[in-house]
Length: 383
Ligand SMILES: Cc1ncc(COP(=O)(O)O)c(C=O)c1O
Image (cartoon, rainbow, N blue to C red; front, side, top):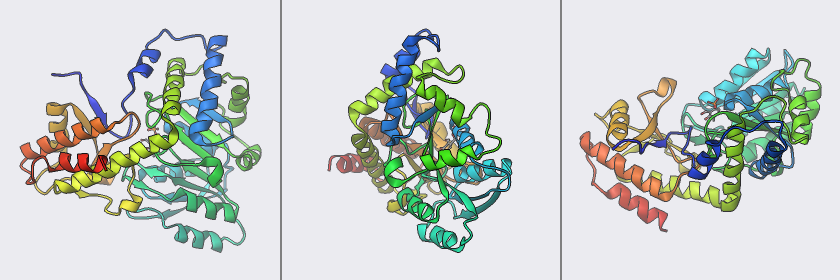
């Protein structure tokens, strides 16, 4: 039977029916009072998810658009940017900064590891002339399934005086990220992840410190210009024609998030991901990130068993069980596969996915005690 596809990739993620029905309606005029009311609600509820009192700008773009928007509103050519790179998405910050003419330095770790905040502190302490203007980082590195200790990292960046620019694309709405309390200067995210709507919207919030630096930016991007876009936010409007249907869907998704409550959402993600890790180990699979303390709660990277290939696992899961998991990216392609447990994902989904993975691996000849993954998962989730 077809048409029961379940996306277990780290985005796009499954979309609730309430949201789908809203998006399916005729698009409304983006200058109508009706749409303005929707925007008012969306702008307010985004602050709840970002845990900030700063305005949250909404762009019609993918998440990378918000990354571009962050740096292209801050950087002047020659500015020094320090990029903390633990995978492809951390690297993307460095590439964007370079494209804008910044002088980019990186702190890099082997894939599967997180940034050691003390290594960053040491580098920042050496910068006695305060040349480093911006530090970029990723909260949840989707390419490897590793989470950085943003709270500690940002505290060191603050101590130094540089701006912290944080990618929260696969962390917001899935793990704790307190923009104001932790002192994050710029935080961005995207719609097709923890926000439970399809791809097409991106979000950005900036601190007062970041707004002051923006004022000194000589050539801010036109479409992504913070000032133009904030003016519209204050008028419950948008600068340009937005993806109106997605914004209507976002209103419903944010209402659902508020109904569940941020803390409960985060606990749900943590519970499912922890149980999943235990279940995978129980069926003799090795996890790419062995250290549970840095493991993501929205994406789990898994090594294939010996003599079983990643493409075969993905193929059987898709063809026989209609479950889509992600391949590794770049140098990790075919070396790992990644299961997303991000956004609109329930315990039932995890049980289904582990059951289907067991069935897949059984077909492919992997040796393990059939049923042990599902049993472990259930036991762990019922604790
Ligand atoms: C952590 C992270 N940052 C940035 C992006 C880029 O987002 P997009 O593909 O929507 O441009 C992604 C996409 O998966 C991501 O996972």
